[in-house]
Image 1 (cartoon, rainbow, N blue to C red):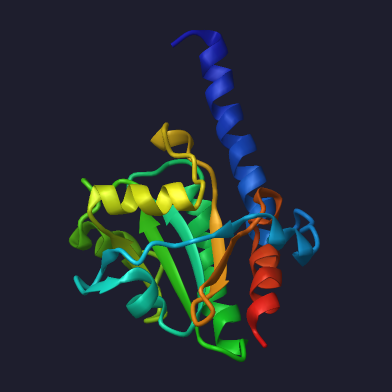
Image 2 (cartoon, rainbow, N blue to C red):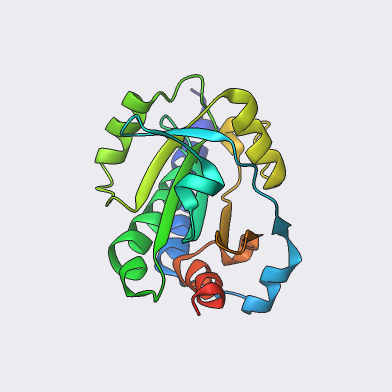
Length: 196
């Protein structure tokens, strides 16, 4: 390894962790909830299998009439997935229970050919999800359909972006949280718009 790589790799890792910590802590200031209106999402009602090996349709069964928060990850991710998982964990442990309406948290893998329900169960265990937070996989074509509808860029799996979708499953009204609001406080602000 040359000298530039010896310095650059640890520096890049440090900067990535610093940004991630700021995002998780909610210190990156969120924009107003009105920005939510920018990107409505039409979620397909495809079948997904969760980390308990239960199969159900995304909108009509998994979400039901609940509020919904979706993010995308994969089990061997070494980039933004940890940030997304930490945000979901915080929502699961401290936010969802205080909302007026039930909240369903859903992590959907972007690597369905590798992330089987068993592998997802191992990965989920590390984050201690409650019953409201499901880690899911599905047929590759169905996962691709969800990603397309969410406008989630995953062509380079290692450089995929941090995406959150928040919505009201009862009203079938889902919105993509703006990239700058991909924080705990940003997602909570989006949820508050639906929790009436």
